[in-house]
Image 1 (cartoon, rainbow, N blue to C red):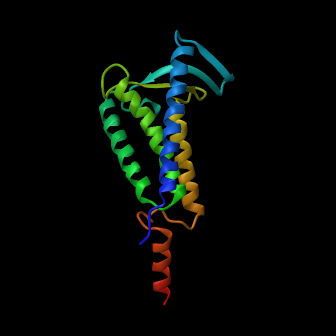
Image 2 (image 1 turned 180 degrees about the vertical axis):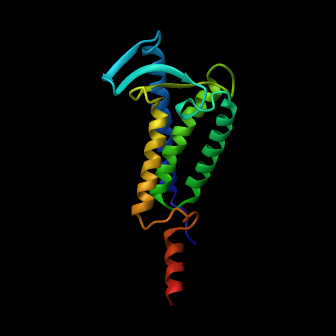
Image 3 (image 1 turned 90 degrees about the vertical axis):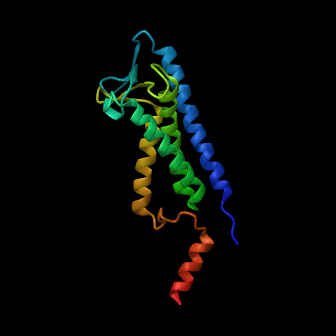
Length: 178
């Protein structure tokens, strides 16, 4: 009988927690420092900081459907949290944790910010040259997605290894080789 690698589960949820905290702390900073239409230019024409509120998804898509994004975010957070507890892959668990942290950071805005519960507007403040405005949660989501793609392409480890320990996988490979 084998046990699950609880250490990577704890580490993954710690990563998710840190992602949420960094997102929420930077949003609090932005709400204070960038109020009254203040704008901070970091790299002229490429990167600046100014406060906006987004009721939609990326690129302000679906602005009148905020409740749908709230529901989808809840499902994603729950599904990825379950995945983290069932996978034996430390890398996939940590990348899923970054996705959970980013999704949960934006979910908190939708649940707790005006105009109302479940349809709150997400605080965005990082302006990428007028192309779009995002936040730290979005950065975590994009980084995790990029690394998931790269790891999936360049690794022999498959994400379908849910619920199997390394010993289970070795036993299956050894028995099929005989």
